[in-house]
Image: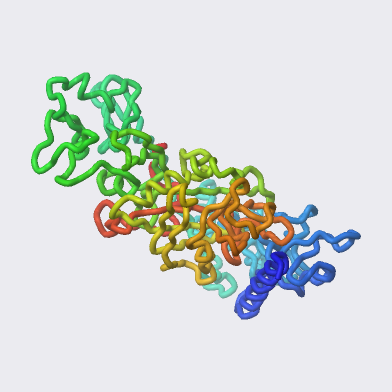
Length: 539
């Protein structure tokens, strides 16, 4: 069976499963059906969507790409509603559906947030919302819930008007009963303070707690940046303090991270580690993000750019490299080895980093490693170092965000390791032990034991060059479900996806299996905290 037919069968099965799920749903059918797009299903093979039935030659895309918030058809017809349907909630930012809903005609007051209270516009003692079709009673104003759908009922300018209204006029009327689960608005955020700017007290510049104050300049840096081999202070005092200010201490001079200061000698039971920092007996300098999180206990949750240590090098700072550490998600301690953020604007894919690179580029790594929004591949040589540290087996976490519903899906594999370049970075992957979505099944298992392959060094001779993305694969198998794939669809290829879901964000992370999840240094946070801008971060 050739590759094209294998993928068509796969697309059909996915589409069939989604249709069954939608038919069993007690709520609105938001998953596109063949029935609603009957005119687009006549000329293409089964499971494919015809972008324009009026053209002489059909342009076919996978039906699973219909209404996924990305325009794959040249005319954008795959994002239009089907027969006897109308769109709604396209401007409701907090709704889970990224590009609105397609619902049956005349059902907008039942299913649409922007029209759910439209019937109240004929009643007295109500006010019309600014940009939606809703009207709400006076007593719903400024109650902390977005009943209008556009937030206009919670505008601060209404406070003075409410004082002049009779809010008891409609109390008790059954027609003014709220629908279940209205949107609770967040408390107004207090303006965040840049903790790295420090502050003046009695004319003396000081830094916030758990930050290091550079000696001759008004600068503050994270304590884990002290003696990391890079001069983060513009005066170099984070690396040269012992030499310039405590020369008499000689090789005993060290940095106390718990006291945030340099000392002439580490006090027992602490000992001076090879990097010049005081640590417990038997401690070694941090190598990866999990080590940093445990060693520097008071670092705030957030996303940090840190320096990982090459544990195979004889010199303390030889061949060290930057990594992005996630101290906010599921206990923290994660080292991000791949990150993708696809920018989608008005259902069109805009800027994204091309991952179809050469063997050498994947070996060394590419992209920017600065913050939570960058796209990058850490590099196979560096991933090899991180996953082959003696006595420190790594687990793999993958965090995804879907295009259609903005759902965040987390999967965890028991172990993750790759071999060196001589062995083509062969993958050793443990079983999938957790998934937050039962339909997000294990798509990486077929890659276990596979060798890394790129278009200029193809391990898999079976796959056509134009249908293969860089990833771990076997010589007898071929798949398009690779996380390095293009976000844009192409004929039978549905775009960047995981199982039935099209994906716009990916974080591929590793962490030591011995990481102390229940220690004070790893306080578990909310699952979606990685996407919330509620942490201080220094990059």
